[in-house]
Every structure is written in C-alpha cells, then in structure tokens.
Length: 291
Image (cartoon, rainbow, N blue to C red; front, side, top):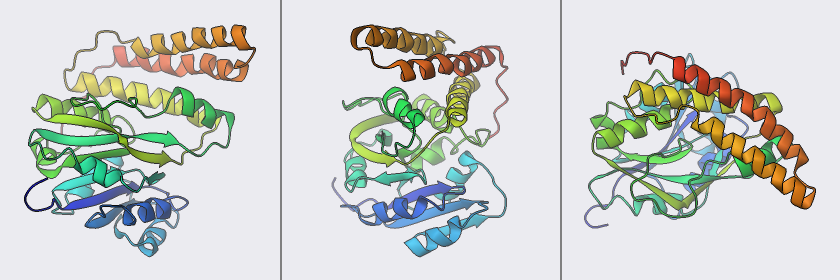
C-alpha cells in the first residue's frame, strides 16, 4: 500500500467472555502488523470480563446493561478514529498475520470490508466435532474478490464504509448482523473480499441444546436480514435442503465405511431447528428498519 499507513483498531464485543478474551487480546498484540489500539466493549457482563480485558492490555469501554451485538459493534467503531476496524469475537485467537492479511486488500478504494475464516479448535464434545466438519465458518480456501458474506467473528471494515451505511442495524442483538451489513454494503456499492489466509481459531464449545439453538438462530436471522433489505430469496428452504443432502451423504458414508452413525444422528436432529427457522422466516413480516 502506498502513502501513509492506515490506522487500525482491533475491536472486540464481549459479553461474559472472561474465560477467553485475554487470549484474544494477546493474539492481537502479537501481530506481525500490530493494531494501533485494541478496544473491548464490555457489554454488561456479569463476570470479570472488564478486569480481564484491561489486565490483558486492551482499552475497555463498559456499558451497564447488555445492549446487544450490533449496538456493541457500533459503539466500538464510533469510539475510535481509526480508518480500519478489525472485529474479532471474544472467543477467538488470531493467527499472527491476520491483520497483515486483511490489510493487503485495502489498497483498492471500492473495498469496504475484508474478512477471513475460522478454524474450530476447541473440541470437547461430539457436538464440537460435528460443528467443525459440518457448520464451520468458512467459505473455503480460495480468495473471493466479491464475496456476499464476511463472518462476524473475523472481519474488518473501512470506517468510511461503516459511516456510509449507518453502521450495524441494532435490531440484530445476537445473530444476523453480519449477513445484514454485508447486504447493505454491497447495495451501497462497496466490494467485500474474503481472504482465506486470514484465520482465527474459534474457542466455542457446544452442548446438544446450544448447537440446535445456534443453527435455528443463525438461519432465522439470516432470513430476516435478507427480507429486511429487500434481498431476493430464491428458495426459503435452501438451508434445509442442504442439511438433508448432508444427511443422505452421511448415510452413504456409513454404508461404505461403517462409520459416522453419531454424526448422522446429529444431522437428523439438525433438520428440525433448520426447518423451523426456514418456515418461520418465510412467514415472517420483516420488521421496519430504524438504524
């Protein structure tokens, strides 16, 4: 990149993340291209997130009550004058060249955002293992110059682009904000780049219940994001159809190798929340915008 280096802030929305946020902060402070600041939004946590984040070396902004993910993301970018805002979730650890990889693509003026992928690295249960192989936050290992989606746990945006779309839609408190802002960025003429070499390790762990809730909430709020912005939905049940194909493929694997029965049982269980989310999403009236 030519000219003056871009100022970069690493921004972490955090709610009850005391167990993992220090590792997130340390991974950012040890980058090959260090951020100019690491900023944490303690979103009304009831644990020691604020104290842990400060001791790890971040500047912490605290709010008394939980305001939700989108409002938290807005609070972060509006609290800095940095030209590039790199968002990481509080349960991730960045590879040491993450910021360098993201910044490589901001030499082109039409690029509004650049994101990477997650590697599921905390495998404590069969549900974590299933998520790693069946629901990982990745678009593959090829660069995408004009991507439809950047995953919220590992993404960056140009400050001027965030201003241009009035930031994140605060309707989305826990899910769907990444789908929503990507739709609006592209509608506003910005290009989004998916860089597979920009990697974070995801430290999430799931129970059966939390996994099913995650699948439901992600699909339902993705539906609302598209409907809220007038984006075309060719098939409301596409996600359900994809899960059904996964199940049939799993049966084929079992027939060939005799392995995969436990995964197949989770595949079968996953059909219910995904179908419910698709069904409810199709019948929902998109709430009015009001960012």
